[in-house]
Length: 498
Image 1 (tube, rainbow, N blue to C red):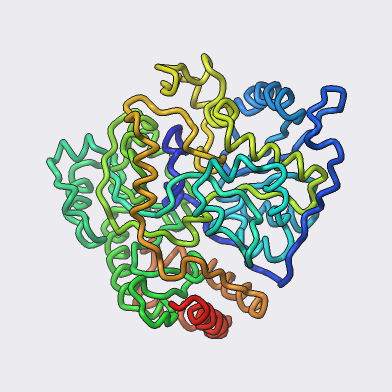
Image 2 (spheres, helix red, strand yellow):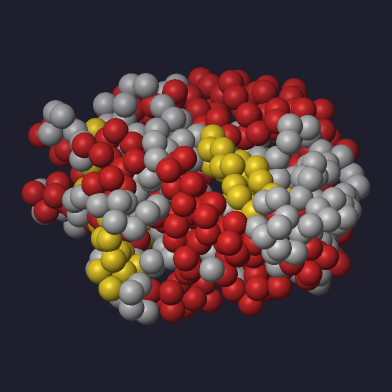
């Protein structure tokens, strides 16, 4: 992901893998608060603790160089150093699930609603329950981040990870290469639905042979009026639901219409012929050889994208701003149940979320090498920034990071207003306990791997493949999963007076 677009917590909707292994079992895991006897001592006579941190994103060329500088600072502050391991977006869930299952040594790991599934891994004991750790070693976190993140990310009443303080709602936008918008005098405000963008795509296809009209990846899903039980799985309630009745989205008219449109675009050549297997379109962003795509936004998003790519990017809303479970849990850092240093890990997470020096070093690298300061709180990125291009959204408190050139001084105030304006999705606060349908979810996941990308990207004809998909999902046990989820939602609805 390119520098500064990285700051967008949900730009990943257009380029990340949402497949997760969703096996789960009941029970919680109490934190092992006595493993790190020297934690919090800060005494230089003690040997520094090395914390092993696994986080998401493409491994960076200058990572080791920057970590060496980070370690000088963290050793002085909390007598700890870091070993940072990065795993690229598309591989993260699968590789980390294997590492977690094997008990590989680690202290801190990125988790979310879409990668290394937070709810399911918390419930099966992969992460430490960290309530007491926060109270003792992470007090600054409570003051630093929006309380809605900590409250909204509780599992069965407990916190198992520290959410990134960022935009709270999710809002989809259509993004455009402004140079092409200006060249053809397009009115992007006319882009309100998937169908409405066709005239622009047609113009680009006919007049710009070297440009990909729609830069789409295999994990694409249309914007639809649903709040999903499990993100990117075919069961949801309508956003305007009154009865909280779960629907199989594969059987809805909204999905069928969108699939027909995307298939039409695929046949017209508006998408890459390899879209069903494409995991990244970074090459298009870097070269400017794209016209449009879709992403999630935040305040000043256009400025971030433009600064990232080196040419102007503009956007227009593709949907309303909703606060979902998955947006609250969109970026988190957990402490491994196998951590030998849980207290020191929490000390580090506290520092990461409260100390601008550390946070910006982790985020932006070394001053004078990767960036230079325009003023005390604003930076300009240098050519070497391409060698240290970290996904800001995944690394902690975004609201203590530097401003980019062109950002208004009140940027973070605008974030707070954006957060306050979000509409609560109907299932906000509900977390599905999958322990009774573990085998069915695994079977449904296998079917999803077969059908999802070809259908959603328009690669196959929905008239032919959608009925096959519905049949296979049902055979795998989707109806049983929906029935179990409905029982839980009905109980949750009654308990919360919904």
